[in-house]
Image 1 (cartoon, rainbow, N blue to C red):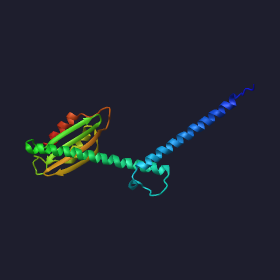
Image 2: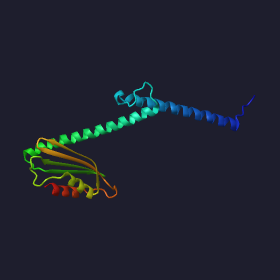
Image 3: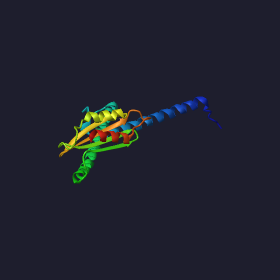
Image 4: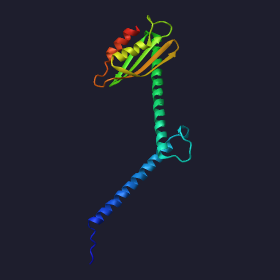
Length: 183
């Protein structure tokens, strides 16, 4: 009876083969994932209109498409907020007074909604840069600011973040200062 003695040389050869197989499987899996990612991106969002794209091209197209989708999500969120504001503005027309100042704070994010009348119902002139100054003085960095005119109302929506997450933001103080500014 003959016994095969693999020894240390045979063991290292088996390990090399196993590593090569594992690496080949990993590359194949990554290739399938890149192909799947590429198939999800609409053709109109491709930067290069070639029949054959490199993986780098696919990843860049996916990155830019994701950025476009994020921007679209942000716009849709603002539309939804505006729609909620329109509903509230109907309530305002029924009997609640203008201006309206709403401040929502979660963790380090601060969202400010200010609704004023464009027909001069505000006793003193409203200056948008003063609102920005108040936010900055309270430790917020403005990320996005928009306004919309609906009928005789102007909706100001400001998204900001705390400059320092350790300090945070005091929503009640921001609300108080903004109400004093707008009223």
